[in-house]
Length: 420
Ligand code: HAM
Image (cartoon, rainbow, N blue to C red; front, side, top):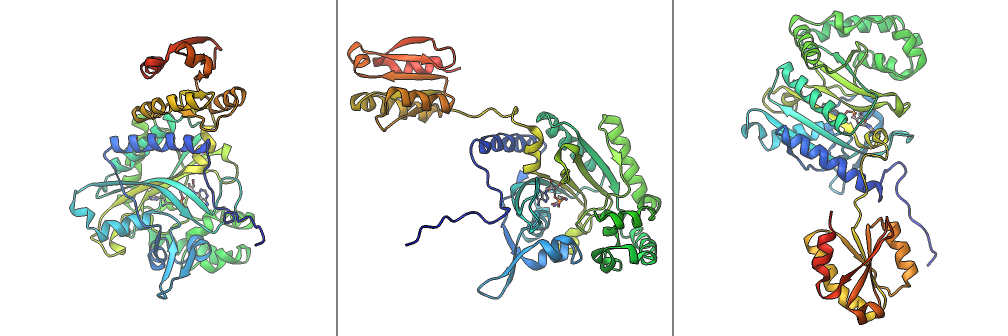
């Protein structure tokens, strides 16, 4: 048969060692922080009925119109690989009546999302998110607490230069009048808009405020601002949030042009933007969606959430953060008898903690030490015919090159004493 090399689907980002060690460390930090704030993990289906996303994210959005991996399965059902997880979390919240378990429900997730976007730096077709959603709390205190938690996470990872941009998109009381105002403004300038923006004026005029096309930007520059159209309730909610953030010293910029690419938001929306990321500069984003639980068939329940782009986060924290988790000792046998003697010690020590490697292939001393160096171990423990005769192993500190001898009959104990 002809030999062929099969490769991953274009834009599907895979995480290989040693990067995967760094991902694990960051993921552990995320889990610890969120569980400390009372969040519990949801592990959800990656595949959903297509209708879920069309109804929640919105039919006239880029994600639903152009970016979904949708296919018909063998039973003629239209299914979609999830492009984001908020819709799935709400689906699960309703399906399993999670609102009955506790009044305020805090849930988090970690996992892959799929969008058919043009791959470039920081943008993939399979990417990963760390996300969280809080159900049952309408107060702006919840928005503030969640944003502070997110900023705390970035701080713990020494993320620099991520700026919080904030806006309010209003609610069903004030947004319709604003949309009409914006529609009129856009209709008057429709010649200058790109095809997508022109087509979406009637159903989704807010998108024009966020379009990257330079002509649309210019046309939208003088557009009415939602901040001038908020009802009293939305205004108080937003100014309450801003003053809480002032109280705790969390910096932010109010950005009245921040509309999101998903339709479910009400009131608070936000993005953490980082210049170092280049064109794809949002490292995290989210907001409030007080109508979605009801729109997807549940009881009216306010909600707030966010998602961090895992790939983009890792680009921002550089390589210095997470040290490689490497084994501590390389056991270096020279000959069958030494291998036989070291194997039970290797097994015993690894049962307690992952700390030794053992070469099974009877390679030369030089090549085993080279590998030990590459693995980043602290010690190499060498046992050859001479060491067996003398009843002592040679222990070499790979960093300082100092050598010492350890008794073969109590090797396990002696190695444990070397542990940091
Ligand atoms: P989103 O803005 O679509 O929001 O995505 C959140 C984050 O995921 C972005 O800020 C970015 O860091 C990352 N991201 C998005 N697309 C890609 C891509 N193609 N490649 C790499 N990273 C990407 C949501 O997904 C909402 N579900 C957030 C939310 C949660 N709102 C409320 N709760």
